[in-house]
Image (cartoon, helix red, strand yellow):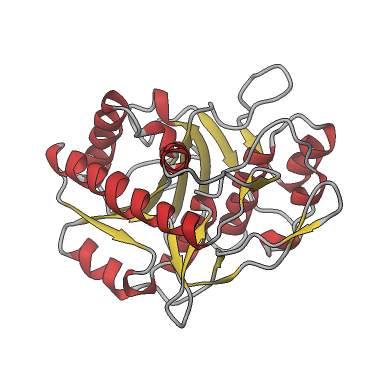
Length: 295
């Protein structure tokens, strides 16, 4: 069994990909090779976003992009674009690339077998003190391990899941990909969650990657204003996972990743405090230096 960045033995892995890593041919091929190499050693479940492609498609459709503190407000017309881009274009392209790289892959969304079972997100308390209804946005829920994912993994397939959620009564919802990945890691009882993006983990005020953070470190960073709203959202997701049994949680730079067991990035460790990400003080304190993404 291989070793993670945090030095612990790892088994099945949940890997979250930022959409910016797979929206070019070169980036897509590199990430697909990375996934195929990892899948040859252990079961991997991939969660992906695609925010920039969604923005482009909204513009082509003449629809306004509406955000609050970086979170996308999602009406039905926007949701239709999100579903079409993520479940159609991005997911299919990634599945084809991973299969071409040598790992049989199956494309899914959170609606399949209710992998991404959600409730409708509560009204959001914005940084300016106002309350915003995010619309058709979901908050992933704890569930038993989805049987479909287990069957696919046992059959040797790599599940690739677009960050689309679904309610108990079948309503599709836009979902934060980091939070979906974290909740799936908990539901699947995996040992490791890796969140790959376009930064070398969590950076300090000098742009240097921080090797390890616990809750107290995170709170101090947020209070100092040295991390962006987008990174705060990732840290909320990481803390959800680390507090609920995921032993190794890492935020890393997907642009420089050649081996998932040797990643430049930041390890997030558990600490005391609320496990509900929406109740986290982080989202109430962060500044507006950066924009979080909900896919």
